[in-house]
Amino acid sequence: MPHVRQRKTCALLLSSVALIAATPAAAQSAEDYQALRSKVAQLQQQLDALQRALDATHPPAQPVPVAAATPAPTTPRSTARVAMPDSLPRPAGTPSITAQGGTSSLPSGYGFRIGDTSFRIAGFIKGDLIVSRYGNGDTATNPLGRELSLPQSIPVGGRRSGILTDASAKQSRIAFQTATPVGTQSLTTLIEADFQVAPAVAGGERALNPYTFGLRRAVAGYGGFAVGQDWSNFQYVAALPETADFVGVTDGTVLVRQMLLRYSRSIGNGWTVSGSIENPETVSAMAGATALSDNDDDSIPDLTGQLLWSARGASLSLTGLFRSMRVDPANGRPAATAQGYGVSLAGIAPLPTGKGDDIRFMMTGGRGLGRYVGANVAADAIYQAADDRLVPVPLIAGFAAIRHVWTGTLRSTWMGSFQRIWNPASASPLSTRQVWDAAINLFVSPLPRLDLGVEARLSHRELANGSAGTLDRLHVTVKQGF
Image 1 (cartoon, rainbow, N blue to C red):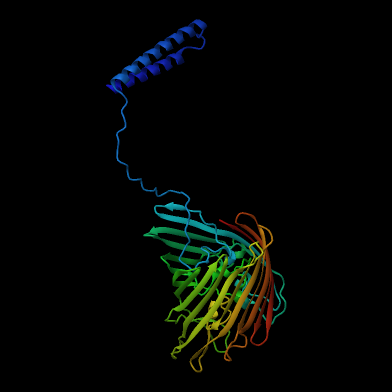
Image 2: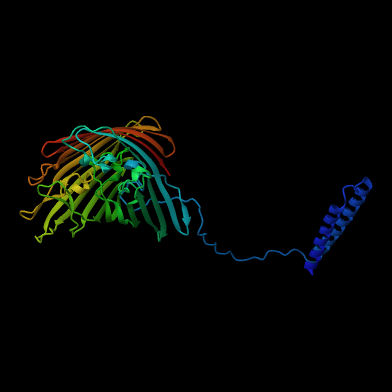
């Protein structure tokens, strides 16, 4: 019955509208207009009377009290911005996702959530223009040393090269993080990749410049534990200075990413301890030869430990490494083994200028740790087939960098690094004996997360026989983070 009355009301309204619309404009004289207004007024009175009758017969329904419902689950396509927690369990002071040079983390607090899992995508676009001139010889086509500061790639014994220019965006990087609450803590994951160290397509610079996407890090963490490919626990990444070059102080720094299982624990008052087992790989050279070989014969993981203190912008890291190296000759001779070890001291010391200036440093020494230092300038050990011996190679390496902030957006870094190697008598006279490097840069950030930089560099390499080579380089870079 109520529905019938409602339909009648709607019919009266429609009739009124139709009556007004059907009246020709020419017929709308003053008398006609007054008659039309009278008819509309009568219709309005009838509608009001009908509405009063309906209200008296059927009063509006009152809301029925109900128990509080369980909140609806979050939609799977929700894009609410959420804060992303620190990526993985690690010693305090290590940045979560490291931008160029390890001096600044990518912006935090940007992300979205799907269900209970928070996601964040970060990274940067980086373009580089590199102008190089070698003092003692030219290089092969497209060597990695034309794009990175790699001291072992500097030619020796030749004549000065011409000006060599390279440009690419292959250092551009992307990282993807997640965090999911599990109990009272978060299960975190991180996967990070770029195009830098993966091989380029042959002939790629002729037209399209394609590069292969390569894995940097892929690691998960929970409750102080981390497992996956990450920076070695033997390396203190936070001490690296800001540079235009991929690393900048390659000669003197520990530099390894590999598969590991790490545990970190804070012990209070700014102190953190951590330990790890990491992928073993012996890199050796045959007696009298310069070529380095990956043997893949190891059976015992490399072991590391770190003691870290950090407070008020300062930090100090002491790390240790122990490894068991092995070479298994293919000619049926018995396997040769040797032990290697290393110690590294690194840190950051703020300067009392009130501008954010600081000193960063690292000093590393030991035997049989060649692949951990300077992107493998030295072999871990020399294999002597004559007596089936594996002789560890001693070395010492380090760097220091001073950072000065000129203004809020303008800053510079002066840096120097070195590595000294004591090759055994059985090593080739063409093996590298020492390398050193010095550089200065200027960076400006005119917009948020936009860095423009220029860097000048001088590098030197000396062989065991006394031959030497140099490299002069000018590096211009632009990097936009996201």
